[in-house]
Length: 449
Ligand SMILES: Cc1cc2nc3c(=O)[nH]c(=O)nc-3n(C[C@H](O)[C@H](O)[C@H](O)COP(=O)(O)OP(=O)(O)OC[C@H]3O[C@@H](n4cnc5c(N)ncnc54)[C@H](O)[C@@H]3O)c2cc1C
Image (cartoon, rainbow, N blue to C red; front, side, top):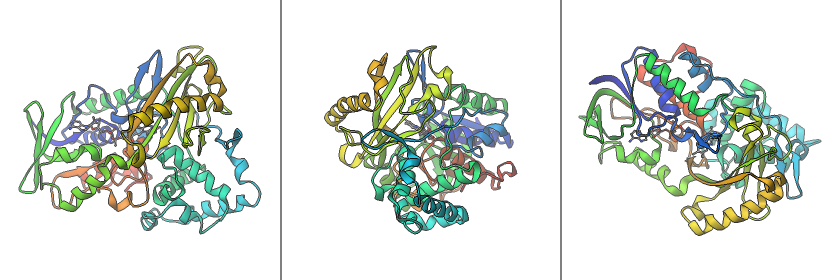
């Protein structure tokens, strides 16, 4: 069977790219190795709760995944947005606004003004710098640094001042200020993740697309520097002159024979794919008969150090965003603490001890957790490539693969700016447009590469 375009992977970027290409009249096959859709943003059911295992909230201010869904007739309903940002400062939770009062507000205002005046393309000059270096041009106030760095902990899971990438964080701040007049916009997709991915897949099929699932791609076939199709692990060969690969960088090298990808690209992929360059956290899912919260039901709470582990992180009460996430009378919270992969990746004893200490921290920081109905520990090592200075921007693979006709790369581990569903969706739109060789006017307002 020959297709115009084959998309590898039915995560966010792959689903978006496949839907757009099918809508534009291409004969598209979407190949996914798992039985479920959504990739890292898959959903899991546990004791009646909807755990967005791979994905919690979307940071789409409306122009990326929401817009792509709209394009193919899928209504993505946003939950109400977060209503507060509590911050833990060792003595307890405080609204983050209290940390940059008085004259500091002027510093924050200067940062916001400079950001709004800046062009997205100017961010390229900041790919090797930290957020604090950029902010220091406009303020010396630690409280102002803290606010945007706390958001970086929430979004990028980076935590040392010199590790918050300037360009990735400024990109997200600029987007949210411009589109929603707020520092951070995020929502839960009403109905949940499984339902959303299922509806997108239905839209894709309705547009004539073919979903091959579960089927695993073994190799992208290339002849004379042109894509010829795919070899599947079950021995089948699919012919196509155009292939879009959405597998994250750590799955990319095995899809190509040696020497097929340009040497410099392969070296960058190998660097990014190293386990030590992952954004990682460990934490707990917690269910209780009362909301396990810091200050309010729909908060985005963060901290730079828990009392015992000293790790930074976040906590979110999902039931506050969508009551249907949990059975009646129960509430679901996720608490995550980021850790440095270069120090602890793969260290099981450290994981076990840290999870024990973390639970004691949670009971201290969120007293309602002491009466938890259940708690489920989790370890996350596939969130994404960490957005540290030097590991972003031009270091990431471009959508276009130079010197090889018919191959495009997409997903949030490519040059997509930031981690997450929103960034993956933007990258999926870029990939579809690259295949088509033109921008789609429907996405004229969508910020993307
Ligand atoms: C625990 C966790 C929590 C997260 N929380 C959030 C959050 O709160 N907010 C947020 O925005 N983001 C969050 N993320 C990140 C978010 O899930 C990802 O950024 C996003 O899903 C990436 O989408 P993608 O399409 O780029 O890649 P992926 O989702 O990784 O999609 C790639 C797809 O390719 C498939 N594939 C790979 N190789 C092959 C092959 N050989 N053959 C066939 N198929 C293949 C994979 O199975 C997968 O379905 C979280 C991630 C994790 C793991």
